[in-house]
Amino acid sequence: MPVLLVHGFGNEAHIWEDFAPAVADTYQVLAMDLRGHGDSSWDEQSRYDYADHERDLEAVITGLGFERLVLVGHSLGGRVCIRYAAAHPEQIAGLVIVDSAPELDPRGIVRISQDVEQHRDPSFESVGQYENYLSTSYPAATPESIRRMARNGLTQREDGRYALKMDIAFRSRVAEGTSAEEIAVAEKATTDALWEALRKIECPTLVVRGAASDIMSADVADRMVEDEMSNATLAVVGQAGHSVMTDNPDGFRDCVCAFMLGE
Image 1 (cartoon, rainbow, N blue to C red):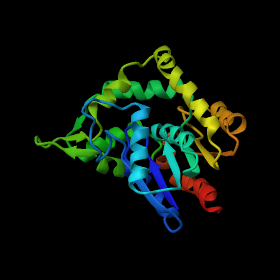
Image 2 (cartoon, rainbow, N blue to C red; image 1 turned 90 degrees about the vertical axis):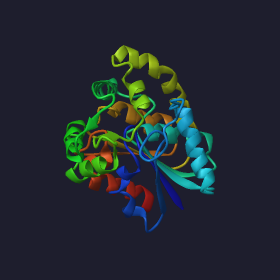
Image 3 (cartoon, one colour; image 1 turned 135 degrees about the vertical axis):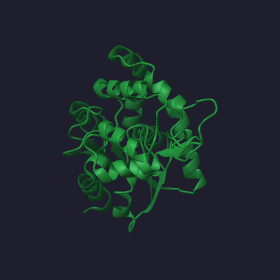
């Protein structure tokens, strides 16, 4: 059975390196770079809506010939996987939603937007300098996770400096509105559509929340599994914020393996 891992905003496929080996003996494990991230191309027309990512996900699954698979999605990737699972129920054998929800905590969105606003087009003298930057953005992440993100998230320019692989246009869009009011307006239609999509998902689903997350509130996580979904369970990972797989790799691996492997 294939399992496809889909990262969140600003990350790339290597974010799953701590987790992937844990299920590789049982599943065919693949991780993708979303458009505008990692080694995927940047879209010339800056098309980075959820529908665009969902079409890419469909193209990958179709191109690989997968008739049934498990999806694991974090943050932005989680929302894309929710949409895909609702639209293609016959293909999805299981779903893991990692600190992602139809309704996001404005605190975390403001934090991310302000960080992007301050560093719209960052470049760095060295990979080590980027590591220092990441350590402030991911204060709970393990040192190895920070090193891996730095190693895989940069490309060296002709002038010798290091730039992010992520499309600057996508980062700029996220920075456009940083107030809670602006976020609420922008999120309303997306939120309603995602709640509706969530109600259509019938496959076994694990919802993973970082105990210290400022993106996925405890109330929203409870609502997802108790009120809106028919076949979902919740796992809360301690000592982890929004980036659960980098903050507490062991805790994340244990709860997802219990779901996917029955351990």
